[in-house]
Image (cartoon, rainbow, N blue to C red):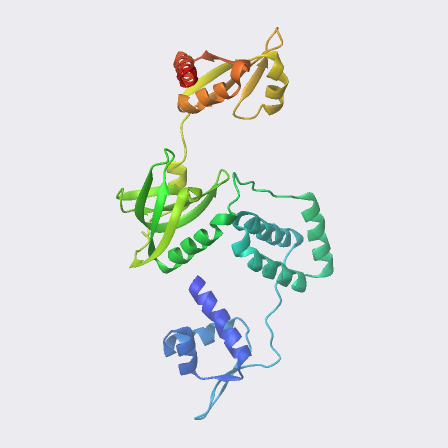
Length: 317
């Protein structure tokens, strides 16, 4: 139905651009049959669009000259959504979409009535959306633009990618989607080296080139569903750490949904949080030095002790 609605709107624009159109000309422009054009004309007439036919060898269909499409009308809330959405896109994408965002907001400024535009400006002053990225992605804007073009054209890419362990590999990937998640940009695609769908952090792509080889996006691929399935971890362990009185106030200020803080009689605090493995938790404890002491579980205590011993041996030489 959306294609029909789009073509009906396109027909109105065609009629407004030129005085008269034949059925064959309309079928060519819309890439449909003559019979479908007649059906669309009937639908427009049922909608009250003032079309009339001119008979004869040079005849065709025309739109009443005085007819104009009604202007777009937005409520203040709808207009605020559009402005804030444009701002959010610029915040996330940066330079590649800066001109598009400028164009969209300029057009909105031009068509919105003064009272609605003033309400939007008041809302923008009181509602601020900030995404916050973990790093500056401006050096990767060209790379991301290439990925967008390849996704649109269905072209494979070759890239040099370094993993978390810094091992660099050459890969051929079918780029499916780009996603902004947890302050980082990710590429989702089919990795021909691993023979399965994979997720790649954009800032770990050292080199990228477009290939003249095509791929087809699987019809059942859902980027959001894939990310929710592969980038969600089940926390299996409860970590308990005692923080001394020197950092107790800092811990209280940092208490969030993922970390609970309780006071102790001696002025120290006990923090508790859930993790899916002990590597990150051990690093977190060690980052606080003498101010933190792991209390539970036993596996974490051993992990911290082993890491501390390894660090000491590194400096003993």
